[in-house]
Length: 466
Image 1 (spheres, helix red, strand yellow):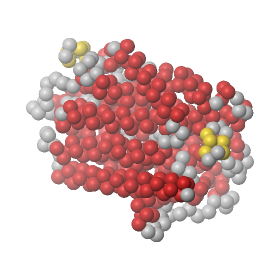
Image 2 (cartoon, helix red, strand yellow):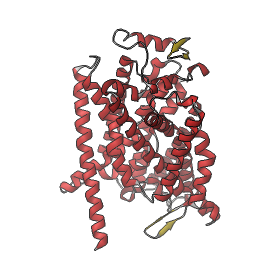
Image 3 (spheres, one colour):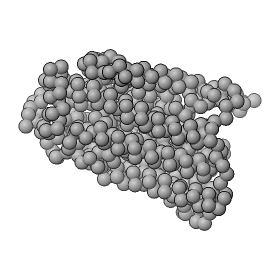
Image 4 (cartoon, helix red, strand yellow):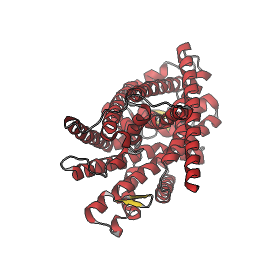
């Protein structure tokens, strides 16, 4: 056992070895409150397994973003769409690798710690603010989708019945508000109250399995319709007729960035890993698994619905699919993915709570050791998310704007800026060229995406007022 600022911490051999690599350049003791907090609790268990870490990181990655991926095929076409999904997996892996390398160099065991090491408290605060904006937006989207699936939604004066209303008819107890209260108190709150992310490894495994169920059913329906010849040839390449249509291609970038964002949970999973030298293998395995699911979902979803594919492909599963047991399969798809999102919720909530605590109480002790502070922040955040899901009718446009700002900073701009600063002299010329490319690509594509979305929104409002 060793003492870190008065706290007992069990040190694992693999972590000691990797810290020794930078003993001459690194401080002897962690200095950030966030870093101390991450280490708290290692003496309570022997470390998370490789499989559990893969499931937790995969669950962080595969969320609501997967529902919008078939719609990116409608914009880009099948061939460029698949290519960019794979490309995003590669640069996500590269950005996480850079983040971990500088974490080892500075002995930082949290993303906020790395930002603080590189840019001081301003860097840490910027990171924490971005995580708050991104994760609150994502969790509100999750809750809205769950409400839409179970209780239905109204669009343009037309009510689309949810699964519960389809089964039992319209009643007060299967209305949106009551269903979300039950989901919050029965699922979200208990899982969000767990203090260690490894405690969620089993629910994460179940959530990945449910995502696979969604994929298998969608693939089965598509293959059956292909065999019967009822699916037309999909669009292979984008239709570019003018500058506006060219700009529209960039609107998929925020969706793809959001689909792969998991950087804010990598350090937490790394800190709890039994053998933390395996974190790179965990990241690579998770990205291979998730990108495979993304590619197959995009292909089968776009093949199934073609140009009728909606921004949220889950909404397409409320019509007659033209095959036997269509109603049952529709319900199975929607229920399996609603359950998946319920189990993803606590994984995304975990870093949200940690970063809000770092913003509000930067000089206090570990959050897990203060039950009152832990409970207050948990209840407050769940309350904000619940209210947002009930009073925001649709935030898909806002979700795109969030992906173009907070998510792209977390995933690409911050890791690139840390590398270009190169405080420890460990970045190669190739690393710096890659980082310049990521920053230019992120800034340019997302500025164009925001401009294109805003232009489309203004045109829509203008035409509706005429």
